[in-house]
Amino acid sequence: MTAHRCSPRIKGGSLTRRAFLTRSALAASGLGAASAVGWAEARQTNQPAAAGQSQGSFPVVIRVDAAKPIGPLRPIWRFFGADEPNYATMKNGRKLLAELGELDPKRVYFRTHNLLCSGDGTPALKWGSSGAYSEDARGKAVYNWTILDGIFDTYLECGVRPYVQMGFMPRDLSVKPEPYQHKWTPKAKYSEIYTGWAYPPKDYGKWAELIYQWAKHCIERYGRDEVRTWCWETWNEPNIAYWQGTFEEFCKLHDYAVDAVRRALPTARVGGPDVAGSGGKFHRDFLEHCLRGANHATGRKGTPLDFVSFHAKGSPQFVDGHVRMGIANQLRTIDEGFGIIASFPELRNTPIVIGESDPEGCAACQGQQLGYRNGTMYSSYTAASFARKHDLADKHGVNFEGALTWAFEFEDQPYFAGFRSLATNGIDKPVLNVFRMFSRMSGRRLTAESDNAVPLAKMLSEGVRNSPDVAALASLDANTLSVMVWHYHDDDIAGPAANVELLLDGLPSNFGKASLRHFRIDENHSNAYSVWKRMGEPQNPTPDQYAELEKAGQLALLTPLEEIHCNHGSATLRFQLPRQAVSLLVMNPAT
Image (cartoon, rainbow, N blue to C red; front, side, top):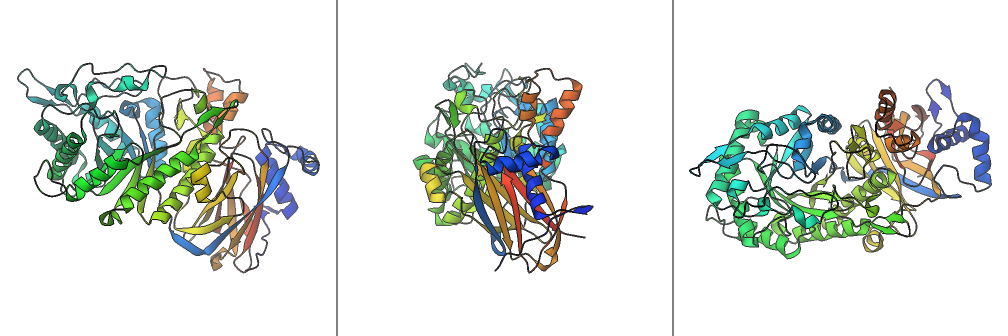
């Protein structure tokens, strides 16, 4: 089909194609209208068009066919989590939870470690506690749900639902209770976190009763209809040092926990095992146990498995003075994990949640190789990697429900301190705006082809080390066409901008006249970090500065709302996309 060009119109007046291209590029580069002539001259002389961009630019053609849906666009992005459960009830934690809940109320889930750890709820890095379980002098269980209630109450008030991690081990239940609370810092060895909470219970019956009473209490407090929408899983990464027991002991822990939840609520959603990486033999053996093994709690065959979960992480490095991301490592792990699950015919239709899915493995760690976290490298990586997760699910024919981003916020830390987080001191980072973009996409996933996309096989084997990945994810529902376009490269260095020609075909008849909104994340849009740097990196911003940072952290339009006219179901849009930028173009039938 021949692509008929649309005529973009700004509300209140017309705009020629050349003026539209100029205005889009000016907005992308942060230049004002008075700089239009200089920008045009810079293009002609092959000079950089935007700050932080290397000389020149290159053309990219992306084709989206609205008449060729691939299948439903699953909202896989709506899962989040963190090590520190108690941050949820603190000032900035509540603020961020509310923002997550607003993305898709009552469909966003939050997973956290340390919910059952002993303590008074005082947070620390890679630590949290609730004091939910203790024993009196005669060894009788004492339950206290106050802190846990506060955490779950906050989730639900913010439109977020619990992805309940049943762990870790309370001090009075641990076979090795001391030392118990660690004092880990980013300068310490990671292994120092593995203390008394990581050990098996001294009594599996008491462990089961703890889980039963907790689930029963949740039902009494929130109602059966609410609790049956939650996810319940046992522990975290039991195939590494988070679990200081054997494989069989973990299966026993899991069987007792799942049976306890199901005794309280027979329709509860239970799953696991949230292994580190694809899980390899541990993961296969666990699935075999759940499908055909003897249940340690009931003595019957098998253990209920309503969803399967594993983790996938990238591997950034610091090379030649800059960060080099390791997207290939994360995607290969997902490929392997999907493959393991798909090898069990019984699990072909079982939902899969990648229970932690991130550029690397430690949100609270710091280091040169983690310098990507504050700016647009993180946001562009997220856009590129999430799209390929859809592709990998298609490759294996699995039921992919979600990919959980293990990033939240850290209270009482410096601004932009280098942690993997979605916000800092109540200021949203650019990466959060990618999730705001995802939340605006729904309906059917469409065929989107780019002549500058890195093929999936090459990305799995090499990452994005030569030509950048400039590609798209598109969706269509009854009244909205959404196209996300990103410009990603593993190396955090300057590079030329992409001149994108977006060809839209197969548009429904009601899109003959449509409105266009173009959202953008780049150096000058939806980016509080760049604004903070231009302020001089204040650690005690004034009220006016804080308000400016809050505004800069929100998803921003690149250009004003436009009106476009299309013929025969086709349109062509053009814009410049700087390196590490992400655009979302949203079209709706004009009313």
